[in-house]
Image 1 (cartoon, rainbow, N blue to C red):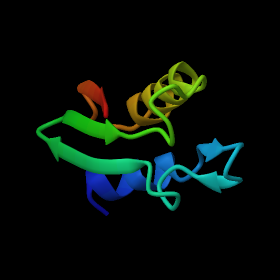
Image 2: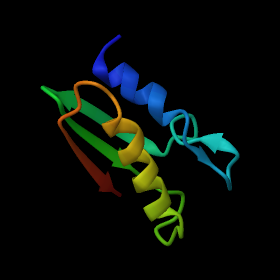
Image 3: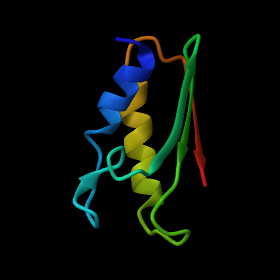
Image 4: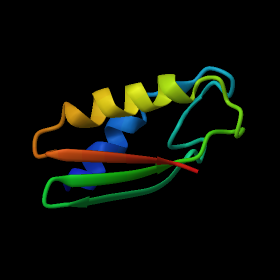
Length: 78
């Protein structure tokens, strides 16, 4: 498995309570790049005024940074 595969697996554990679906399968993760330990994730909440953006970014950060090989994480909110 690649680092990107491991990241996607971790992100599938984060569930959007309003959609009752994980953020990957719900289509909220728009892009994931992993290069030499630097990870970039593009996250698009269901609404620009989503009150849970900080919850999701915290969960993404906690999940991805727990993976071996991740040196730096950038999360872009669209």
